[in-house]
Amino acid sequence: EIVMTQSPATLSVSPGERATLSCRASQSVSTNLAWYQQKPGQAPRLLIYGASTRATGIPARFSGSVSGTEFTLTISSLQSEDFAVYYCQQYDNWPLTFGGGTKVEIK
Amino acid sequence: EVQLLESGGGLVQPGGSLRLSCAATRFTFSSYGMSWVRQAPGRGLEWVSAISFTGDSTYYADSVKGRFTISRDSSKNTLYLQMNSLRAEDTAIYYCAKKSVIGSIFGYYFDYWGQGTLVTVSS
Image (cartoon, rainbow over all chains, first blue to last red; front, side, top):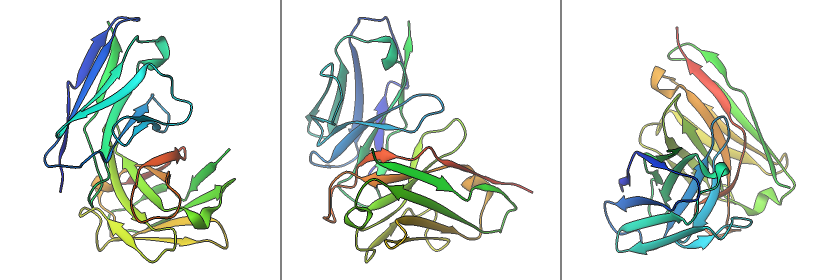
């Protein structure tokens, strides 16, 4: 099983600032990596797939990148609606696995 | 817009069974793989099971293998999860999720999710 490790667990950021979230895979998953956003009481929402492709309707302030087995989600200028929990998910191998999540909170 | 509506959750005793359903509308259900993902209270997301668009291929997390069975009925546009031998650690919200990529056996990431149904396993 591929283990996905997200860091930090909690990120405190001021509105308008940049947020950088990390996700590391225990082995290569190529670019078969998705990012989701989840707000309290809501289902997850797809943000990024293929490590760097924004899903339909996702604002350009969200971007994804990869270096080897290290994936990064960057939110260039945090808006109030971006405070949420973010999960990465690999879909390169079965079983599918999610990271433990990063909570982005207001500083 | 795509809609996924889960049902069938509830309170069940350890060792009991439940069958979850997910009614899918506003997309060609028979063309997409589907999956179940769960979330224990206050915890992260855990993938549970997936099924191909044809229904020929099924996949399971080790934690549920041999106890849960995923299936689909394209004539009813409905996804199912039969859960047997339930344990306290199966307590979670269960989400139905639609695979983003049409057809294919690859690319199981999810562009639409239902609102979930809560399963509580307790005596």
